[in-house]
Image (tube, rainbow, N blue to C red; front, side, top):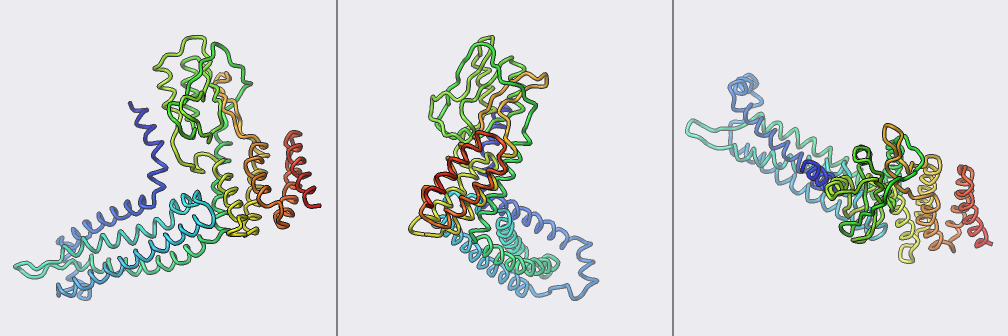
Amino acid sequence: MQKGITKWIREHYLKITGSIAFYPVLIAIGFLLLSVLMLEVDFSWEGKQFKGALSWIRLRDADTARSIVSTIAAGLISLTVFSFSMVMIVLNQAASQLSNRILENLIGNRSQQWVLGIYLGTIVYALFLLTSIRDIDSGTNIPALSIYLLILLTVVDIFVFIYFLHFITQSVKYQTLIQNITKETHTALNKDKADHINHAPWKPEGERCELRCPAAGYFQDIRLSSLVKQACKEGFQLEFLHPKGTFLLQDVPFVAIYSVRPVSKKQVDKLLLDVDFYPGQSIDVNALYGFKQLTEVAIKALSPGINDPNTAVLCLHALSALLAQRLRNTPPEVFSDEKGMARIFLPQQTFGDLVRLCLQPVWHYGKNDQFVQAALADLLQQLKFVSQEGKDNAIIDSMLHEVKGHGK
């Protein structure tokens, strides 16, 4: 039961935290708690003593206090609407000129979520504060300390808005978006390397039993450490038949279990809890999605409607840097337990697969553009220098021959 809940959280974590409303909601709740705390301080004996000692911090007119708070709330609502409109314009431009997959990177950007959260939090603070200003029999009840804090927060919001203008104008640049995708993919590739477990040659033993995909979806990830422990405990070996990121149809075999004993349904159900199938293409989960996004941006830039070969060349630069990193650090496919027994085989996308998925489609669309020809020929020469495997050199030489032959 606990593992099932953990899997549900794992599958929905990226969807929840990647939502544009995630951080704004948390920040707004924080500001609501701050308003409650400030009102407690304002109406406490210590707060009244403090306001009495500083005559300039006192507000005696309830109408003036209401006007200040309501004016600030109305102004911040307008500022928030304007900021949200700018975000929508950026998202629309990115979707139409780059790729729909880019939207996830923009929506999940923490900076703009923090900015929008501060705006919403200040509005919540002001509205809650407005309800506390009231006339009572003994006089007017005015939370002066809370109102002065609201004024200070409003000044901060103005500076945050200036930062937001700078951020939104920078984030819409193609070069910035490409750099962000490249950085995320670089981090994901390093994560694959960090998941390296001491591995031995893959030699499965026992009877082979294939498990079929329970429903159509993307084979996203596995909980490697948990699966290794489970395989060691149950005495079986797991051979995954497809690399991570593959879209699988229902009832298609996706993993083979090797065991000297029959595999029970309970063991299968427990194994499936450590395997994730869900829609979406998050770079944090799989570096392959970063390669695909850069390829899509390059192809979209080479389309007749946009015709921006320079952006395609920028994507080729980023793809080549990532391919060079992949050449230097090939992720392992075989993972063993603490005793050195090979327990899991997880196929990886080879360098040739990445070239076919990324460089060849860009070359297909841009082979008649001199910018693309020159850039790709130069980058392939550099990749050949980085490569140390004969089979990888053969792939690079084959494509380099095609590029140079077409340019003649």
